[in-house]
Image (cartoon, rainbow, N blue to C red):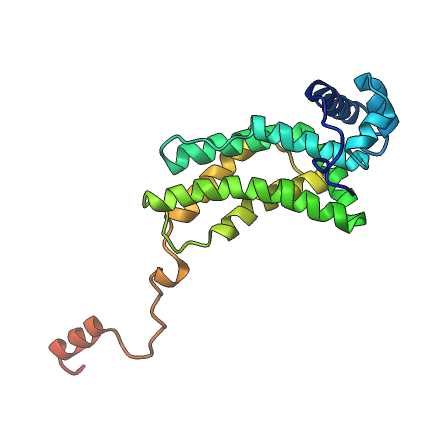
Length: 222
């Protein structure tokens, strides 16, 4: 894989947008497996050599298209509260469930191509994690969550739900899931840690104090 922003002839922004749009439309209609560089070029109205000049594979084209879309649609909100920020961010994130073909196709490619896997992780997956981390960092600065809470684990929970449902398709995705996950995280963050929960006293073989008092005041049985 080559860096699409590396040396070479400067790209026409109009041609770039046409190519990225064509790739996404083909993906939504036919799926990742049927996507070809030639098909992207034909739909974009450019020569195949133009596409290859800027991207080395269809995975590279799709990755750039996905990054552009995510940055324009799933922004980092600033509503002033953790509840507001999480709701807006997760609603937008899970609203993009229509990209299942795109995301699962890129994940499959990442499993086959270690070089692409690094680009997919660094340019897309880590950037989405950084966006959510920014929301959690602001919440910690406002005192809404403990400063020592494991924010990376919270991020894993959010994206773990997203990717598990994307890959297995065993349960729905969409805005309702984002709202349910927001509520789940807020409840978890407001609950005391397990070590702070009161523990139940172990059973004792000694008689209860009130019963002892009762017997002593009554005296021995006749």
